Amino acid sequence: LLAAEADSGAVQAVRRGSDMLVAPSHWIIGGDGWAYDIGFGGLDHVLATGQNINILVLDTEGYSNTGAQISKATPKGATMKMAAGGNKSRKKDLGAIAMMHESAYVASVSLSADVNQTVRAFKEAEAYNGPSIIIAYATCVDWGHRHGDKAMVQQQVQAVESGYWPLYRYNPDQVGKTESNGFELDNE
Image (tube, rainbow, N blue to C red; front, top):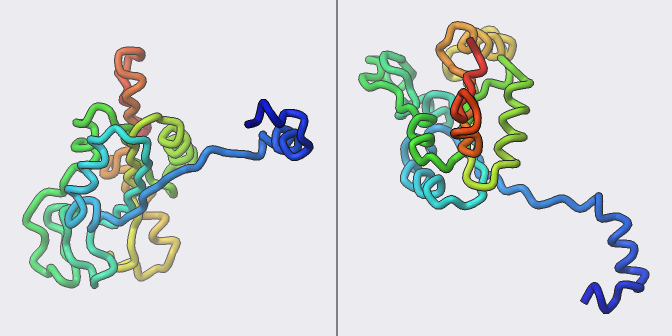
């Protein structure tokens, strides 16, 4: 059709503005309660399909919207409003599980701790032709931040600096091509 109407003014106008056309970006965005618990089966299935879809998990380490219940994202020993006795189980390592698929791009980020690493992870996830998942440390007011928003930013930075929350990127396209074998640990 375009060849037949190549001289059409409308076709020429579209071609002139073709740099303004961008490929669609598809993202699934959810919290840790969905990703680690009630929606884990679906998340695991999506990662196994090989489809070109991006997933962002906002990890608050607990069910933030339901009054701070523990979830499989809650660290062992953590106490919450609805779990005064503390969590008895270890936190599920969603990133490690996702990397077991071998065909999924996986990143762990903390926006407040390293903006550049976060942006790099989003760019790589978007460019990767297959499933990608970014797990973002997202502190929540229900964790007892009584000092306002600044305390939440500070906690993200401290979590990364202490080694509690690792920043990394795993790109299956780089396996066998780099010394790191596709895995880049971005904090030391």
